[in-house]
Image 1 (cartoon, helix red, strand yellow):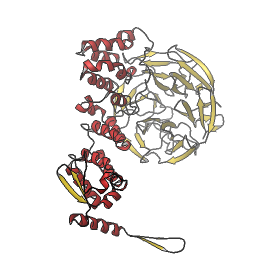
Image 2 (cartoon, one colour; image 1 turned 180 degrees about the vertical axis):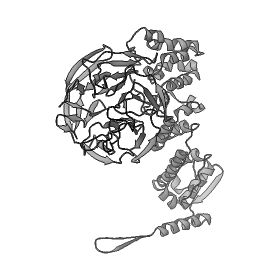
Image 3 (cartoon, one colour; image 1 turned 60 degrees about the vertical axis):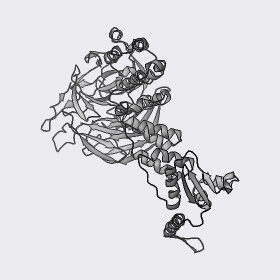
Image 4 (spheres, helix red, strand yellow; image 1 turned 30 degrees about the vertical axis):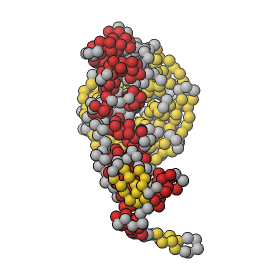
Length: 581
């Protein structure tokens, strides 16, 4: 019961109990056959009912009995395309508000309820199907939802297919997908896969189910696969094992630019019609790679700093660290990027020695080789990839801080200065969002900074944005969707901070979010599949003791505003390079 007052002080009494009592009364009239004036027939079953009640509950019956159709005056009305058991259930629902849905009747009940325009039963069937989604049935549910234009159910089934893609493609339903639905699924940015090769395997399996009819779809299907992310040896090994000779020849011709021998004979990334889309999918298995940095033990003195050459890779699916090939020169203050399948480390320092060295990890040989050297030695800079080019911002040049912006074309192997930052800066943080570069905090001639600046590489223009709530030097920066997170860092009088701020790109506004479990400066920060990962860094100093490096790792979920402890990196470090591959 609820009571509402209007402006004149009158009281409107609203009774839920009255509604329930009325429904019970209507159901009693049905059971006892009182005042019924129409018989609804499906198959051999006849159900007596009331025109008025059916019309009030269903637009279908309203049109039938109140729009001058011939059924208006018929004593017996036959309903076609609805089974008698389902018609009985739906009439019972109209009179009682209750219906039993199970896996045996849900599909036909949905069809009948949609035809009779009983929307609440349609919604209930869709909710039931959402809860029953399984790799064996999700494709069928998605097609059913599309047939009835149920966008919510179709979206849920599509998301389930994407999350469980590896299992879904093993089921018979997958092999029966129409071409349009198949390409829509294979193109999805949100496929949860361990490697892009699994998308190629799935497309090939679909074709081989009926090769005589499906070979003609080869190009449309292969255009959904991001071939630069697949190891050529593995790709062509699968092609060689293809039992359909015609399909094997067509695949070799189509993918000839990725043939392993051709790749080894050239240092340039191959060009082909499949070069587009070389970034891993949003929900693909991604790896967090931490490179170099420096190490100082808890009991260490100020000068007990050991530069590192070791590299570790974190599997975001299995939440495990594994060793990766060491870089050639131990260093901290370096930056790292991943472009066209190659991993680059850029600059850095070993104690007082600054490097102009660039190292490149060959994905085939898994060995580091020397790349195009920087125009001059750099440390404390930041780098990112924009439109296939590597951009490097700021940093130390000897004892001086620079404001330069330089760019490397990996194809040409040449560095070029393309502009300057608004001020000379180092120890800042950087992230890229939709082709724009965001730079936050750092140290400049005026000291610690709260600034946030945006760089447009097309116009080469800088824009000052809303400043952070706190000054942050040596912080981390990463983006999730349209939010940028500034993590930890240091400010005057404090060696390390645990606070975290979130910046809304749309609103140009900073908001404080939950602090990390551990205060840290110079951490490695990156986002993977909607989570923020923070690794290592240096602690706050204790008295006259210098800060020590950390091995702790934690992840932040923006949806819950909670931090979770993750497995620590095997070796303490800070001021390291970090990149997602």
